[in-house]
Length: 377
Image (cartoon, rainbow, N blue to C red; front, side, top):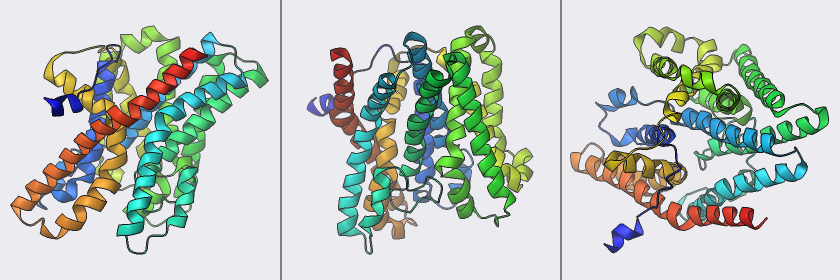
């Protein structure tokens, strides 16, 4: 009973169940992708063929949610620098405590358990500069997407609010203008790098195109476009939700089908437009899922729990649990069924349990403090 209370999370009834489902699937795709090497070699390709890019889903969902907040903020308040500071402080209360908790923990553990670890390189991680326009270092691999997110939080509200002040244009105009400009910018960066003719290799593609701030900001901006349509053209956002949901699923599934194999082998698609396809596919799911307001029963609680703890799961599952705890002791024994079962139970079990504890006793208190500060103002 005490353990059950230790892991119990209070669920806010105002949450949108459909978006929790999308967030839950995103983190499950991340975990499955990272945990592939724990599976028998014979079935890895089949499981891998079902795994979508969970981080790209997170990007679009984040853009939709933060874009909605930003639009409502600008529609209700006069653009000002204090409004910008308030927005930044609320986002940083939400994202930075968990990030720095895991960063400091990884630095501490790596100093003692990783041979040749150079802790001085971690200074870039404190300012999210480790992959701004260059390949992400091996240390704390998950942090690449946090850099993209944090620079989005920094750049987009600044351009939107300051742009509205300087040019004296409406939120409706400045939001869509900033979104389109950033989508063009990131796509152009990818196209420029593609045109330089880098030899195609998965590691090069991952470092040069997939995991840099300048090449991926557009993925989040597609979510902002979704927020823009949802707020200013709500009737169309809702009217075509079923059709868009089907099209979105097809766009997400297409890279996994034989029909798209020739495109995946085409450099311009892989380097430039594969990210656009994934973002648009995810965006098309949102109108339908945003209409699923609530649910009930075990499945509802499961998806909501996974969604609530997804940020903590993302931060700890790979570098902390998989690389530092599981891989050193299981990597050389995964030809034995008992070790395969034990390693998977340990990986998923530790990830879920520790994430709940971090959310409940560390992340949630910081969010409560953020809300308390807002109410005091």
